[in-house]
Length: 436
Image (tube, rainbow, N blue to C red; front, side):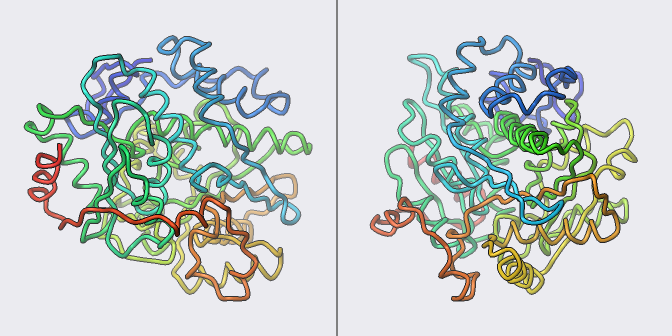
């Protein structure tokens, strides 16, 4: 697999180099030189394959010979060892549940696959791998569990003070071993900026072997395509061959993976980018002007991103014709009041508890279908996190229905450990150098 930088199409690096370096020095993002189209026989018979079989076929077509087939199968069977069911709520409205992994969030797909790929490529005697990751909520927990105990690796998780839920913070700060957490007095965008700055700092790169576990790393993006193919396979089993996906969107890795799957031949009719008040992309899709803005805090905290990193990948995929992108993707945004109304409606009408991110995706799907309903097309909205991670969002009548998994109960018995920093890079750099 050869990759290039979105800022320099003549760049060529191997998959291994892209995984370990995560971000080119020119501050672009890595993309495959070739996005293969999967054969029709496979696509038309997806319902005959299991999730691990689908994942292997998709990954092998992208990665090629960089990881031998037997080794890639072993990585996938170890990493993707949980289900992602499509649940019907009413005619032509389905929810894709992506929170059945160990951290109870969709990030488990990317984090577990990436950690195992990195461990596979790490050779004995090599310099310790320092993984930096910024989180707006769920990424950190998934990365922590994905890398916990992985030899010769150390993970530093940056999260915004007061802007993640209590359970999300416990998932970040109670691991110990090779996982450390840093509370940043700022926003997710500030955390992300610190991580990106570190990758271009000469002194830090000479001293440490730095890489990222954010979705800027191509090894995070690839496995997120798996659940789109698998969701379509589940629809095929029900005799449905047309689908649209409504995706809760923050840093735009999730919908970026869906668009990559579309590029590989997955016959998705339309994508909906559903955001909270951080509406940079919906505004762009309406106006044609892409204008990042400071992020604002909302109830759907994992989507509080004002300058989504992965948008450059999406723009790059459609650089030949931006009109194709605008025809394929619609944008919707909602405030906290509308999010709470959606949560209540879903509970009252489906007896289903949706986290705030999931509720936004449902609302966007419903609004899109108001004007674009087709009887033969299934609308699928992505449920990205277990509702138990956001207990303060729900009224008592709804929160009482939430089945809290045992691993969450156990988190409350553990002690939090974290460093506290400002949002200036000088302070973060000093922390890294003094805590090597």
